Image (cartoon, rainbow, N blue to C red; front, side, top):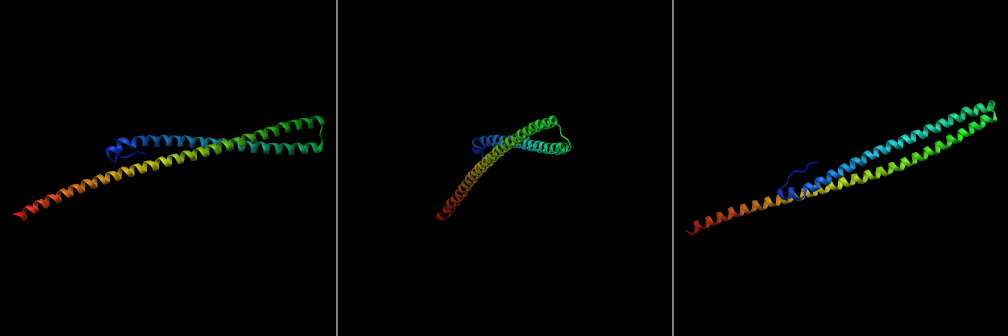
Length: 166
């Protein structure tokens, strides 16, 4: 966003620092938006992986349960139980990862919201300062116009007064 030069005083004193502040706030907001997108992608990936592990465990259980219904050797059952325990641990770990990614996503969204509010407040400040500068310019122009009009009127009055005195 570029700020117009409303008058020399305002251009020298106000817009440059505010423009810099606005640019900085916008860059922080953009970084927060990128972080939020990254957190969203990580969260979605973690949820997807967790769901895939759950589906795999269910398929594995169904396949081996049907095997055990036909015939089951004790060594094979122990192997199955050990693998199921490790698979359950993997599912639980992935669920923790997904929850953590969800927390990170919430933090990133909160940070993004805070940055968007900051940008909006700086933009509002810039708008108010520009309006103030425009109002000062308008008042100065009106004052100059009034002074010129008063001088012309005074000159006419003094000129007309001489004609009547003569």
